[in-house]
Length: 86
Image (cartoon, rainbow, N blue to C red):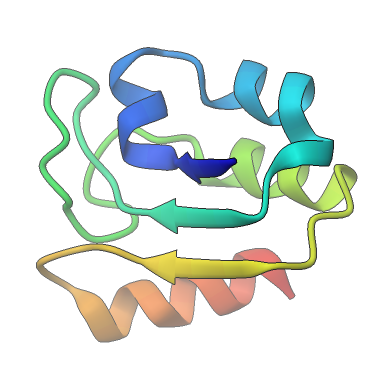
């Protein structure tokens, strides 16, 4: 399964998806949004709780690809992802 954090945030199911399907996740797309539309904003420019998401992903022992899917603040987003997931 591919987990798209932006889509999951719109559906308010990011943590539930990670916890329920962690063994089947093989790819993660990340971008931020306000929870109403998958706007692909940079990390930290929406209401995704990135600390909580990163903690759940680490707890699941996910070791695959995390792909940044934002349309703005790309370099800043990459740095934030490195901080969150390493």
